[in-house]
Length: 165
Image (tube, rainbow, N blue to C red; front, side, top):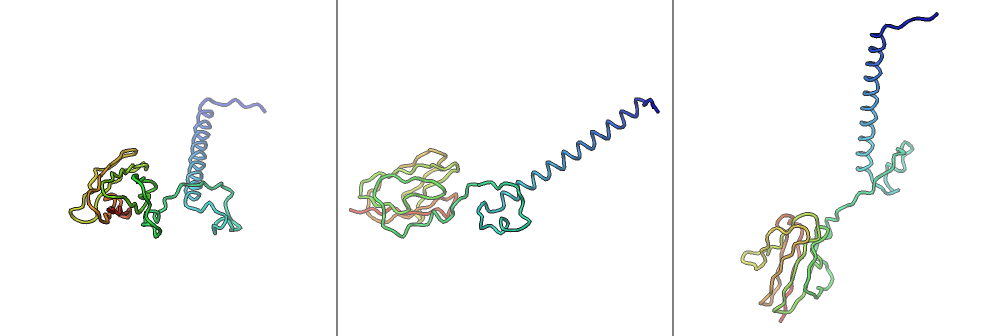
């Protein structure tokens, strides 16, 4: 039997098909977003509890860069000599710099975030503006002593300069 279709039947079917396709696309996009979110929140290491689960997703994990918040702790080792301090990975490196009186020390921001170099105590000599990426701040130390400083934007970033005669 050969039936002739009325044009409105095609339009109705077309609308339903576009609607169904739109819903399917939305479902795929939502599933993809949820998969990425779970991959970002999960550990990329095999020791992850999710990786050893029998119900683990076959979705590949993403290796996301991490920020080591403990890197800014002053080192327990000996002070480093030199005239440059790098601001990198949310830390001052070296954490303790030893210089003779009259030395000019230069701090250079290698992070993508702004940082400051500011004395921790009142009346300290270090007071930089916010340093953008690749910006530098210099100070000449004219008196011996231990000069503690921090980043006022990220106060967990601390370090010292030991100035000797």
